[in-house]
Image (tube, rainbow, N blue to C red):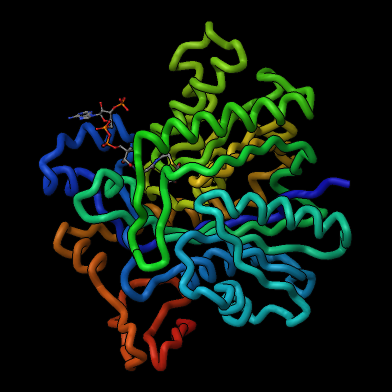
Length: 390
Ligand code: CAA
């Protein structure tokens, strides 16, 4: 039985900051962000957008044409959740009017948790092939103003419907994974911004990649030539370039130059370069970017996927692209979403960044910005109020 991704969609904020604007403000050469970090623009959420609205907007689109009655689980993966107790997916379940016989849970492990969501969804579908599971990765990547991580922020959600009818990607059963207790990136409960040891985090990422690949290749028997393309977790797109070089070296592919290596990942960097880090959704945004932008027909070709979450957990897995996958992807909608965004100047960016919701239970109405179908309209008695726009 084939199990994998039947449908997918991503959603990101209507607003973005061009990293040239940030470079000027921080007294940095724009070339550093555009070339050495590999990011051009980063999505900036307005105050009435949070992981729930990002997720609901992505999931509503992913569910178009899917039999919703068969959604029996929601795995909501996030690093930037809004509640220590209640799963954000329960709000999404209501906003999308999903049927009540559905399990909903929130998953956390930095940027990795979407992948255990996908694997757990596949296991549930294996147990009951009639059912489908909705995996949502939604995050607001937030670092301190003026910090080294600031240029690698972003926001957005990717929703994936996992079922026994994988119209986009059939998952291979083999995976390789790696865990180590490291402090490369973390966010204590009392902080809104992540703390990060940036250079250390890059080294740990590459170590986790090597160790995960080693187990994956031993278990599956697959080697470098088995893969048509590679998708990586992309905190910034230059990380993908470092990752493919590291993996090529581990696989003994020393004769491949930068051009050949970049061709194996390049189409998977396009959307991420314009949206920024989605944390839990970055790998899946890269997969969508690859499938929607590659000129070559990838039908029946195998794609390698590497998921990484600081702290840290890595997982190397793979899937085979389904026949006629392009028809199952909302390509035009995704392109329009990125194209039709509104640019912010630095003042508007810092205003959005600094907007603080009350923490004393008082009632607050959030000014309306451009959002998708769902928005956070305010807070009252410590409860978030979401509204569906017509
Ligand atoms: N013009 C062009 N390039 C320039 C330049 C200039 N004027 N000045 C510096 N650069 C280059 C540097 O030479 C360097 O290039 P190489 O990587 O090729 O050596 C590059 O710009 C980065 O500059 P720095 O070495 O000075 O690094 P930085 O202090 O700006 O930090 C960063 C970069 C570590 C990525 C930082 O943005 C960061 O901490 N980001 C958040 C953490 C992160 O994303 N880590 C990734 C792994 S962890 C993970 O994947 C989980 C997750 O999602 C967070």
